[in-house]
Length: 234
Image (tube, rainbow, N blue to C red; front, side):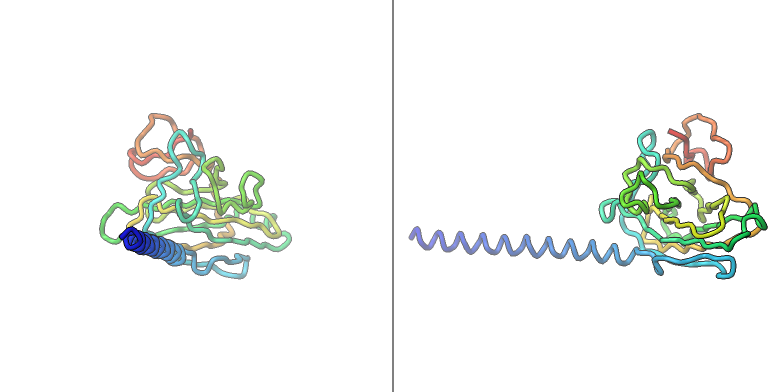
């Protein structure tokens, strides 16, 4: 009798292990599929004075990443898949003498999306010039919130628009980061263009409060939207 009981118990244990393993593998597959579906397409591009604009899409996004945390972070927390962010590797290559001929040139990055109907979708745009010693890896595809972006637009607007300026001759590399702050399964569309005669705004990255903190915004800060969505310096 005891032998039969042990056999039945072993069978139950085997079925339990099999079920848990199957569920775990299915969860990992779904996470991997979600990462693939939200990856930038194409994942990289090179902008030059003769290339014309670059365009890419990413999404749909299903998992929220409500960072930076106000009064805690200086930039977003990106660590896929638990804290999802989209990364695009941007290379800007300009010929010798370009900056002298176009001292006010800038790279304009516009990120927009079509809301799925909830009216609550919100995505933020951050740009890191790399390599950076305070990021690991040094292209800032993974961040813990302590790294302030070099440029950003994170004000609750659609589209979000940020500009890189001043520019320099030669080759410069950047990581363009899209953060799904409040996603509702949208796909973002991003356009990157060189503006020879427009001056850009270098924005110091700031954490993102969802209420007014009563502080003045520093000159040159990127601030959009109603007071309830202000970004303020920590």
